[in-house]
Image (cartoon, rainbow, N blue to C red; front, side, top):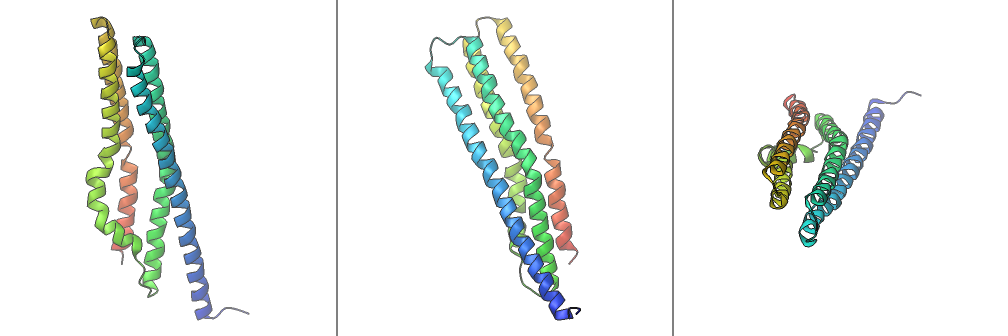
Length: 194
């Protein structure tokens, strides 16, 4: 027997709410895992920086190896963060679409739109540059640490070249944030259609 219009609408609402809940769980899982890993890896990286000062007998080669491992940890976390960022952003985009559909059906549900409207300017001002600045600070600290150990101008020049290349690569990776901006624009488009 075919469903009545009211039964179809109730079924659609149930499906939308189930998907809404699944999107929340998906976003919460990936976002919390990425920041848990980030906390551990950043703490380890900073601990390695501290170890390079504690051990007085460490030469420039040992400190360089510790620095490389420290950066490796940071870049592994950053790569993982970028990998799961798609899941987080797609979940957010789907939240907005579901909220939009429920609003069209007469329900007042706009949690994520309200959050998005209030925090959009803050995210664009602070959020984009915070990771980049963190990388620059850690990179500069390691450069200064290695410069303290450099015994000749040639060693220092090699370190400077490495530092410059690292800064360029870090900036290049950070420029990829445009994908996140595109998804934010899609979210805005979803709500402008109303």
